[in-house]
Length: 278
Image 1 (cartoon, rainbow, N blue to C red):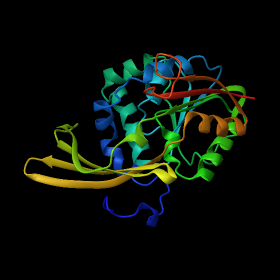
Image 2 (cartoon, helix red, strand yellow; image 1 turned 45 degrees about the horizontal axis):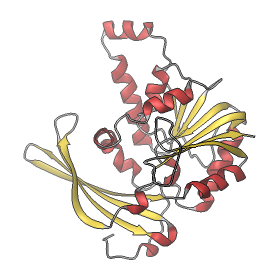
Image 3 (tube, helix red, strand yellow; image 1 turned 120 degrees about the vertical axis):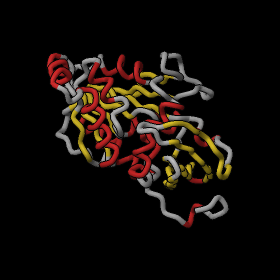
Image 4 (spheres, helix red, strand yellow; image 1 turned 180 degrees about the vertical axis):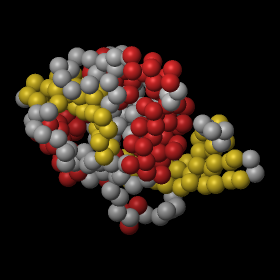
């Protein structure tokens, strides 16, 4: 759909595009967010007295470093291509040579368990986890109110009483100006391909939706391929999200404005909510 088309004519579910995004997710994030949030979630997760669940674990960008730090963690994601890349990342980290296998077997860290599933209906028993994490705006991919409500209720079911629910929101998404076919990133990818990200943005303020139309141009030698998909996000304010989280059975204990733990304000770079199951 082009910038000029009315977004209300197209039904958006929120999970579209993520399978197609999988081959480019780590490449793009290494050039934008990087690992800025990983130490924060490591500190939080190491306080858990029991196992941790990560919602929307994707390629294991957070789950794997947390596991290496000693956290017992399960990651869940709807996208099979994303989870395949998470499994491949673990395989690469262990290596395939005899020496690599010997070194891997001597390590004390336990690799994450990855589950393909729907975060609106988590396939785990009641009270299984002492902590649930929703990093880097994963809840913003729930573009319908009933999907967010179902997810929060599902999290409340699988986290034990007194457990922690950590939520990371990306606040600047609704403030992006609309534009069309802008070159955002250029560089080399794993395997030697040359990638160019050409992006368009459209806003639907009434529904609080921001849609990124992504066009990845992949060049290998003289051959060029294009990969097109869309990612849509819904952004609520901190007070709005707080009310929904508390309605689901949590008490918000802290609201932070960065990954160093500074207090939140409306101009903060990130919005982090830490809530306790009551």
